[in-house]
Image (cartoon, rainbow, N blue to C red; front, side, top):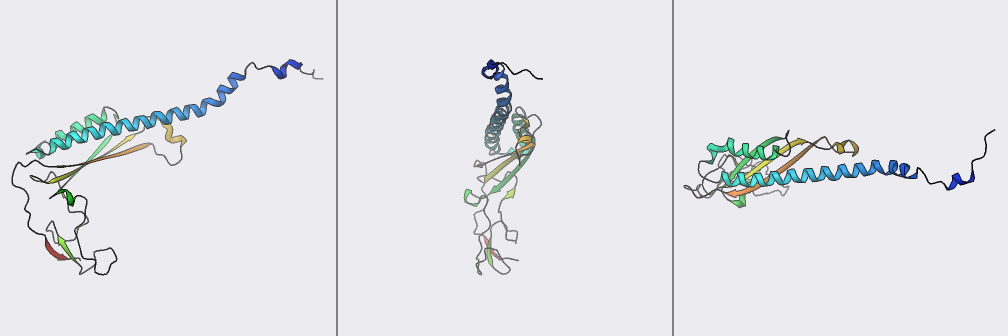
Length: 200
């Protein structure tokens, strides 16, 4: 036969703090890891943006193309100071002016379907005989060209919060872009009107 519990046990609060702490600790740790992960990613993004702005300014001077490796290496070093295992991808596209950045060649959409169909006339801005969705040319461009400089960074997250949140991956991808005009260190690209062609 089990002896009845003393009446004071129902009012005994000893040990309640341990139980409360055990209940609140998991969500508290998840919240803290989430905040740390967010702060880490934001700081890495700011480092990337600062580095790309400096690199883009260095790229606008004459003969910068000869220093491409060292310019990109400085961006890599700045980002890897925060995210040591980060991998970087660099992309530069030159345009004749700012209005052409990330724009397709203009065309006359005769049938109104939003596609440059066979036979529809277009302005061949880059002179390659084809309608292009982007008129930029790879590289540093020439004097007075507008250059779109994009850096994509992939790195492993510093905190394992991704394992607790559906849809999150172990790696983080950041992308930073800036556009600057090259200095007038030489003759600018020709400003002849574009040739008209027909979509293929």
